[in-house]
Length: 254
Image 1 (cartoon, rainbow, N blue to C red):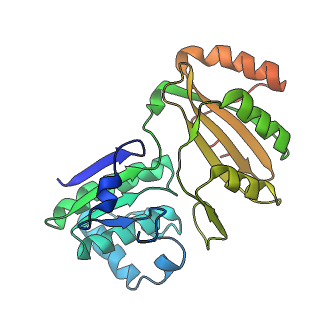
Image 2 (image 1 turned 135 degrees about the vertical axis):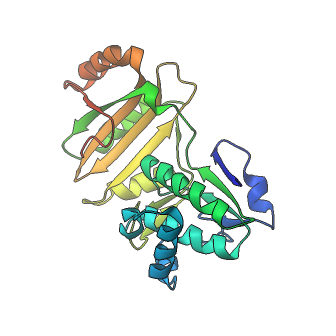
């Protein structure tokens, strides 16, 4: 099967530069865009969705979810019908949506003949099952607290994504940048703006994830901690923020 999955730390530039590959969703001018008006202008979406379900053999609610995963599934299938080789960047998809996208493409790609699909995850693979997410919930938006959190807890961490657009997952794009701090400043400049920022440092000995989630005019500051260090970091976070952290396996506000 000609389906390959890699992450952002790999050497994927050669695929983008290769004229035989169609680049999709990368923050470069020549890449095919799959959000906003690009997806809205795609003709025959309902027919494409029916074809996908016929291939995979079951009804997939993601195809009518009005979210990023719908765009990725439908547009990738459309492009695979007319292009032999694709390299797709997953920016905008959640971890769970990426897993579903790959699962569906594992069924579709072999059915389309001589097709090749490279999926580049927009973050470094970390074994999530070995980490426990701890969040401190702050019921207001406070820039100073966010910047202190970054200075004290996220030194050496890099954003998981290379490109940032608002709204983050679905809707007409109002603002986009390749600088996470510029996006953070944009989100903090007005009320009622929501965004999930994720950071990584796969070499950190005790925690390899960092999270800043802006949700409903409040914020969740988090770290993904090795299971053996959970108690120690619960104590450290409690001491610093004077409240017990939330232990979450998904979104802490879900």
